[in-house]
Length: 187
Image (cartoon, rainbow, N blue to C red):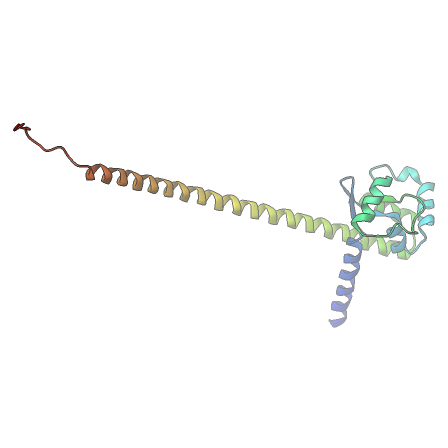
């Protein structure tokens, strides 16, 4: 029992480490070639070489090369140094592209890594769905609260109008009246 808990915690840590390497570029979730190569325990150039030999498997919605602006923005977001590092702009692989990689890299490490990466994408997607559901519930609550507030505000407005009318009526009553009857001038 205790071993299974330890294994589960280790898997959660690995999944979290993978999730931290998933970026959103061009509106899609991707992993970069060097992060994938590290996960698969191969060199980046060998991973990219395998991909280039099988380009037909990687249409633009599976894999694309980052532009220099995208790469510099990503480095700024992640506070990585521009010193050293890659000589070429990295390739970004979508979830489908990563699944396609599993057919190219057919080692036990690649298979196990691919399973972990797919689970990380699923966990990330579930997180986003849960967040969206929570946001929807919060928006409903705010809308409901504003609606009730607006209804109470209308009641207060009506009450204040009644007070204003009452005060105007009281002022009208307090005005001096003209005496009733005839005025006789005694001059």
